[in-house]
Amino acid sequence: MRYCFLALILIVSCKPQQAEKEVENYPVLETMGYYQRFSQKLWLAGQNQNWELADFYTHELEEVTERLVEGNVIHDDYNISNLSEAMLLPKIEKVEEAIRKKDQVLFLENYELMISSCNLCHNATKHNFIKILVPNDSKIWNQDFTSK
Image (tube, rainbow, N blue to C red):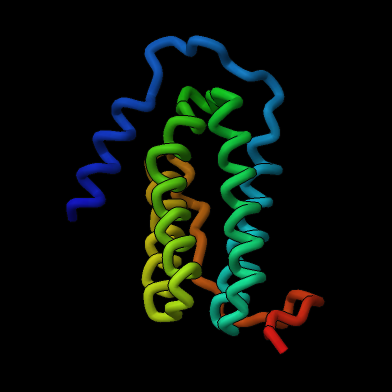
């Protein structure tokens, strides 16, 4: 419940009265595609306790988020940059902490919180028809996620 309340505060504070500098043609959909692909690969690496690969994908998620934050992206009157910085970056950092500790239980807990923040943002921006799930299968990827 605490997270929902904080998300509501963020939503209200991130919906701009008037955008300071709206970035036209910022590839929001492409960015979300990177999030989805990297987060799924991150989960698969963590499931296989391949901490080096999990660390790689965590850094990729951070880089995509940092570019989005720096872009001051306003999309459909919502400041996607602010929402991503406030809601997603802290969750990525928690996942990163679990990876450093090589703690699979903590990794899975923090990963689920990260995915939850994606869905909270989708709900906040009236994109609740986009629901991201914790993966349950690796068959769609042509990559080996084991550390051996």
